[in-house]
Image (spheres, rainbow, N blue to C red):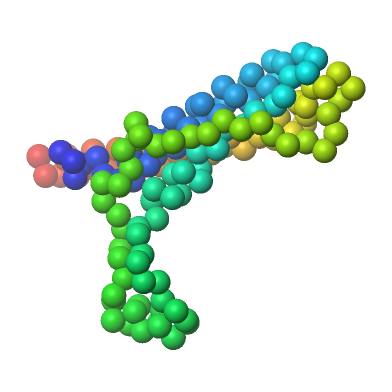
Length: 146
């Protein structure tokens, strides 16, 4: 069963959950656009996800020639397995740095938040689409073998 739900599916699940949390933070920022002294926030989970996905490489190639030699000899790691438990990935909520807060101390920039919301929605939809395609492949595999 663990081979059925591989790293790709766990990464997509984590990405969807991260996008959902990021959406809530952006909406909170937008809801407080007129609250005096409110500091806008952001969720950083992409870096943590990236760190978890990078395979450990104790001795990286020193130069271009060594990279080519490793590729030619196929001495490189392809893929990762079972590295991302979605319930253990650390996400960080950070206060966003701004050049000039408004006179009331509020740092929410509605244009910036709307751009973040659009980007977040597009990425969330892309993760959902990739997950749907993965399930479609599983459905085809089951129907042809069963």
